[in-house]
Length: 162
Image 1 (cartoon, rainbow, N blue to C red):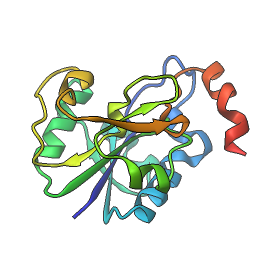
Image 2 (image 1 turned 135 degrees about the vertical axis):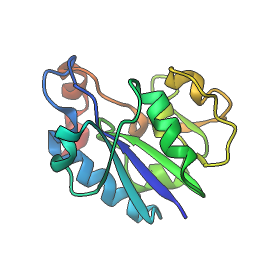
Image 3 (image 1 turned 45 degrees about the vertical axis):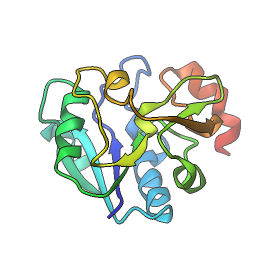
Image 4 (image 1 turned 180 degrees about the vertical axis):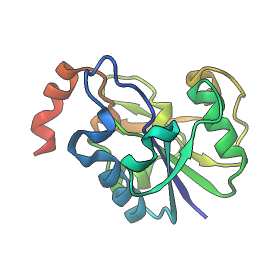
């Protein structure tokens, strides 16, 4: 079974507002992931206070950092796993269908939080996301694989959101 995991537990301090709530992106990503073949959608929402923010099945982080919490969730799954950070405002079903490994965005950065892989893949147990997915191959992602961390980055992609 293909499982989609949306990462929506961050505090969004650089953005100044909760990125998971901008443009109802968690709901939109869940729909795009379903279109791309995900049968189950999980939202890693951070803590118990955030569970009611999302309509999907929520998972509370089990550890103090995302990498270790995500590793725990993946270890309980079988089959294909598609990740999506809540700030992937341009990600869509076409992108999700074409990812095999870790996509590289249009500015040349690997985006491990958009990785697609089999749950039995040789992931590295680490406190760093970049190390966790270092054994996965890179693949083309383009601008749709770009994530947004600041208001100016969001402004830069606004034209694509219309």
